[in-house]
Image (cartoon, rainbow, N blue to C red; front, side, top):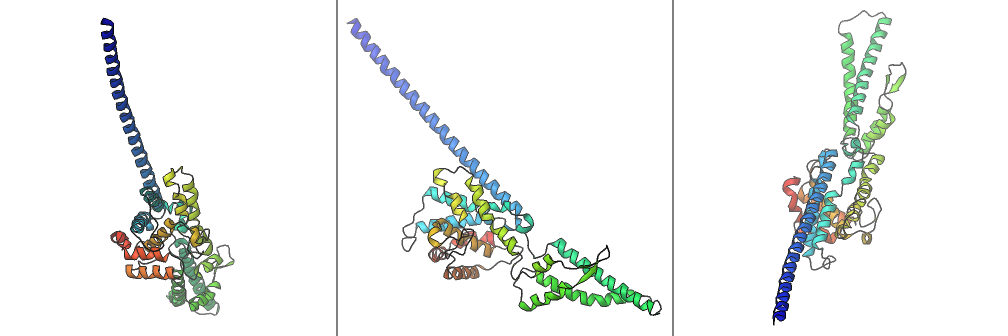
Length: 360
């Protein structure tokens, strides 16, 4: 009897110990799970901070585009959400998961990070000639006026004309009229606008201007690279500078490819890499065709172009109104550059209104 009682007590004791152990084990699992979740949350916050710091680095290099990356991310995410609500057309079967939406957001925020690899003087170039080069040309034109006025004074004295007070200033003032005409021509050509053919032809005169170098030899007032810059037909960048700007996409891909993205974010580099590709193969840097471009990149292309058009903070362009910007987007879709179906969703869903207060 006593032995049976002891066995029962021992069994009961074992059960209680097992219950206590199981309870403690559950507590430990819960504690560990909370630690893991907190660690995951901390890692996500750390990564978000890294992404924000990267965006700040981009904007520090090019303050004129401040806010562009954030707006493109918001517009692209908004367009992706609208795609998820679409039931017809080529996007009717596409559904982006929450993780893919996050992936799109990161790609939007970091799509221009490669600009850190572009020379600053090219990145922020607002006009064809750098300010210091324009100042040098103006100084040489002034020196040319002085040289011509001095030469005329010397000629008059050699011919026996007496000294006249104010004669030199009079000759100098006569030169100023012609020089101002040249200055006006240079300044007009220096603007990043479409250059009319007659103005381009007038540049021939600038190519022949000379001044006397301090070493005594005659030198050109505008050097070959100055004339070449002023001859740029549209915008402020030469072909070489445009290629350098365009290289930011490849720099972006190389940078993003170094990050060990988790499975759900693995497409971030490729999405950003293709945001300047166009459906007809005329984009860059890889000249992909429509079927080769990720749908996320097609959405981002629309957001990127739209924000660039309406942004009021570019030194080389004035802001385009929202209605006119939408017309330009439609023209590009008709030309086979942008995805017409995605643009339809963008316009009908009024996705463009998401950033209007900050873009204008």
